[in-house]
Length: 304
Image 1 (spheres, rainbow, N blue to C red):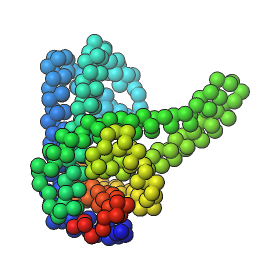
Image 2 (image 1 turned 45 degrees about the vertical axis):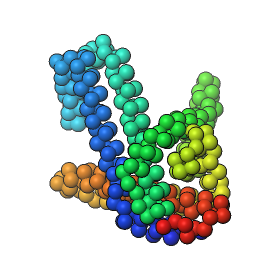
Image 3 (image 1 turned 90 degrees about the vertical axis):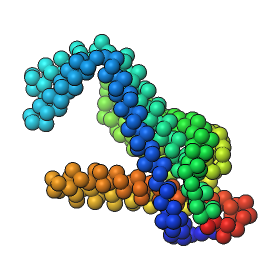
């Protein structure tokens, strides 16, 4: 069994030998941009160019006024009413466009995420991968992974029960202090609940795609993997968190100068797409394969 350090080092070597592993994330960004542009164009066609430009201009004026004054002046309030009056007749159109955009974007991202894991699996086991792997694994696992993610979101939202005591105490007029305390404790518990789930369910994507499981079975298998390898999963999660914090910290440094403030968002996006995300995918895939091979009695040396 490889130690975490060996998983990181050997995974980095696999990524270095297969730069094509960034392809799913590049294609995902392009596909989501095109999809957004199509939905945006459709929205403009439905509500009309003139009205759309008027709404956009009104929102722009409101944002600029808020930046300059920092307060809700009568002029800003009047502009908000004007934008509201223009947008209200098209509320259903905006809602439908938002739903289409949300579901479509998630499906696109899920397809390429599944393809990325499949490519990482083949690269880890055989030393190489191809674009065909992306589309093969994407077609095979997109629906199951999408449904699994929906279930995970519902599980996370179930944590709202931690807020129920505080909400119930709000009905008692003499318990405002207790209600605020209970509500604050509920928020803390919900955050802790989400952190535990984010760690425990992190292997779900890899278990589902690599083992070709359905949504529920994939979630169960991912949680079982976490239960059997808590320290390994936690350490990998810490590595991901550390990388995210490093990029955030570097970004804060670049935001000091006006020029680098403009350049950094594009640079950060390229770093994420071409380096960080493919590398993390390979690391998680290698960790899952190594531990599962060990459980199945297969030598870890089977990994390239």
